[in-house]
Length: 146
Image (cartoon, rainbow, N blue to C red):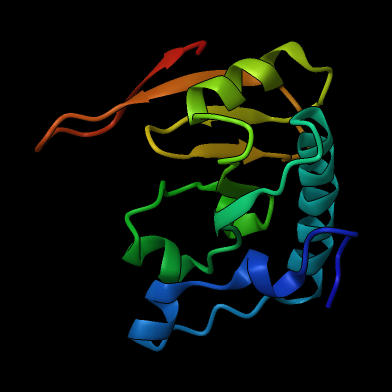
């Protein structure tokens, strides 16, 4: 099912972890409505990055899947508002975040997460921009900006 021109419901709900663990990650009608808003936001990102294709690595996560992957307890992924992605034809995650920071796209959160970008289109639309920092054996920390 196409949500927008370039984004399908299947790619925003697909999860290798869910498949391996037998987790049902199907989205209900309310979540599909949120995923449609997410897809519309991803279309804006695609345009801001020169109409380059985005590779979605994570979209909607049911609570069980979110726990399985170690997601935040209040993750916007569980509401269908967030996606993790890369855009290799545009550049690195840091280059993507810097480009989107300069755009007028009304996202809620934008995080440079090492090898991918996290974006949320939750209704608050706060335009919060962070960089994640990872250290072995330590919880992830975040600093403002990119």
